[in-house]
Length: 268
Image (cartoon, rainbow, N blue to C red):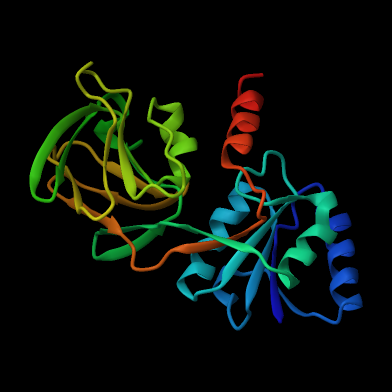
């Protein structure tokens, strides 16, 4: 087995975790390659990601597009997407060399402005911060499979995968989806009408998001990173990507235990 390691050197537990991981891999004679640039990820059987959830989101798409399974070790704070804590390096390596379960997570494909973007968590369309948008809401019209869903007037909309349903969408009032559900969520951000509610729809559908007002701008963020700015009349097309991200999991891994821990920590 050839293992790749993607590191976030800024996390507070990075040094001690890496030292333990590298030593254990060498002792077990497992070849490994360290990546510090997501663009370089490739040529390995599995990718160990050291960091928090942000680091996982940054590297997972690159791995998923190349069919590389990922395993997260938390070197940050919450680590909701990671399978092991920093002190569980030995257990992580044992899973790599043993029989692990695979959990497939769907990915959003977003086409806008002649470009294609991908998101494991969410695509966020948010009113722009420049020009007239400083003091205006935006009107975003959504269409699913060519049929108008609604016009959402407010700060924008979130389109979330099941993975992202416990992130920004949840904070905005969206539902929680378990990772195996084949659906996406359209969640309005601070809607100005009480009839604008989150909508769960099949991930086999195509969603179009259109900005009609030419006086304002709409910023697109994919997994929290700025993608582009849409002008009035432009639209984005979202669908399920033709690849997924495969996470290596322990047999006793429990989504609801993780969820309860996360919600409890968020509530403090």
